[in-house]
Length: 91
Image 1 (cartoon, rainbow, N blue to C red):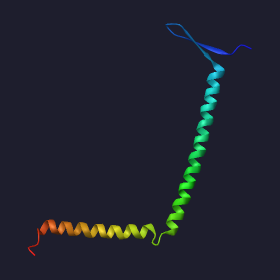
Image 2: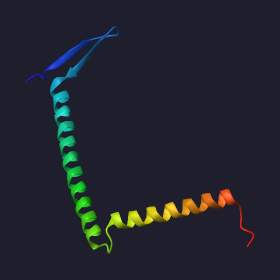
Image 3: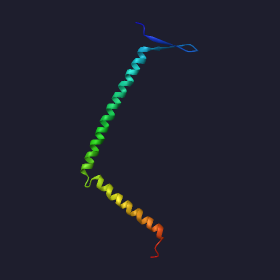
Image 4: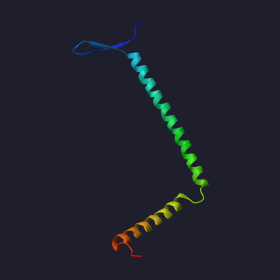
């Protein structure tokens, strides 16, 4: 059986494409994309579950740690601004 080909006319000559190879390649690319997507879903699920277990094992919730760090940052910024305005102390 003769393979099905398409001819594309160009100014320099005709290009013949084997349609079955083009379709087969497209199908393989689509399957590869689906397999890659499934892999990303599995990896994401594993990372999310590991992160949840890690957060559950923490002594303090991340929101409490972030709040405490924010308070420390505000205090340091205030102290730095005050030192900038008042100059160095002559202790």
